[in-house]
Image (cartoon, rainbow, N blue to C red; front, side, top):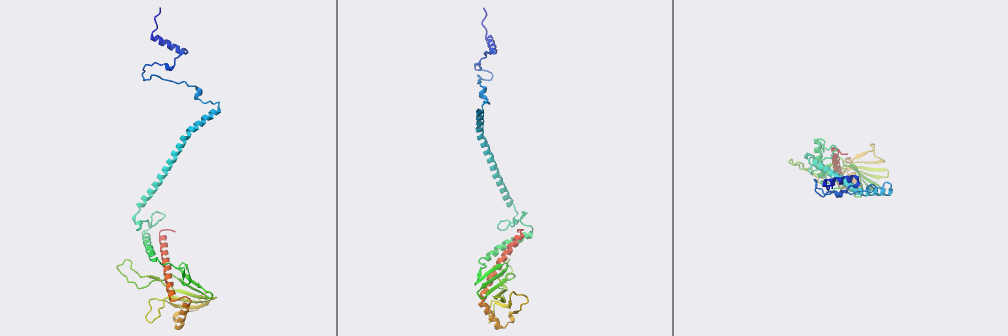
Length: 328
């Protein structure tokens, strides 16, 4: 009688059976410990039809594509949002850097290129603020002078009418016109080179900028009384100084008188006021007063001329400052 098979023979017979199609399941692995500490490995058998989509069925294929799109859409939106905010934050940071650099450059600007308000004196295209030392000094002075002149100008404006005369300004020219049914009276003058101090100033040699007194414009003015094609013309001037005792307290005098047809020209005869008969002279002064050219009117005319001349002077200073700074 043959001896019973040993354990090794049983294991050998089992392996031979597996090679003949009787392979045991992987679940039937030894339960004893192994070198890797794994007791059991489970592999789930899968049908290839469950892994691959049915390529012969278009509907199933499209459904699979839709599922892939739905699964990828949230990821794409998240990526787009991240990129957008990245660019947004980067742009804001860039703007802040540019502003900070501009402020730093302005803070490092030479103190000599700033006025007493702490602002740059000139904005020139080359960025140097001033071109030469003399231009820098000139612009600094003009800036302060314009401010001072505007303070003096307060309350002094050119009226649109003066005692019934309409006022028209054309540069340095001033024309006052009054029209009636029978005649037209025109007073015209120019404010250039017409300013002088009202009184003899007391000069203080220790003063940096001595007070020259009130500056007033007293221009020579023309008075034309026009009737039809004929014109009676007077040239008048303001009197200098105060009237002496026994003299008329006149503000202006007649320098010249003429009468002509049409337009005036150099061939028109004119007579000087100081050679006229005294009584005739007084009668002509009375005539002018009746036409509105009185001594009081002359005082107001001087006020108007002073205001316009001062405004023109400030405008000249501003143009000079802009020209020196290189502006247009």
